[in-house]
Image (cartoon, rainbow, N blue to C red; front, side, top):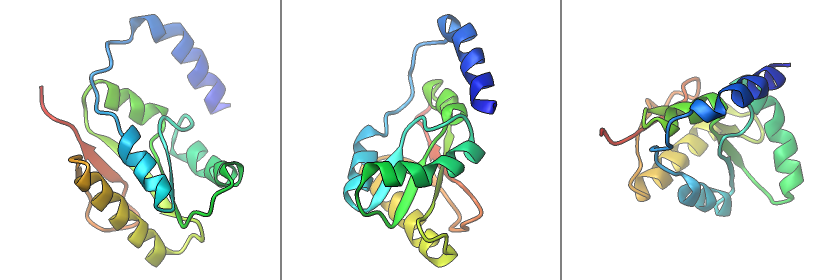
Length: 134
């Protein structure tokens, strides 16, 4: 239901969207996937739908993963405008200690690719991706 509403809103407004000036996470996300964290860009409409769909995405991919990471369509709107946006992440076994390790690995991979983040290490908090100021 939410996804249908988002798609309708997107179709109605796609001609009014500004040029995409946001950073791309394609390279660090590919790097994450190679290291056991399935990483999806513009995945689902919101955090709730993304979390509900990530298990199926892992199964469809067919590779062995210990963690997952994504940003959803609402985050992508912020990313495209050059604003900070957030990554949702977790462990495939839903263990907080493992999720923290996944979060730490994500932050390190992004840092290695010159992407600035803010995260307090709390698994209840999403990882903020900071974009350059214009």
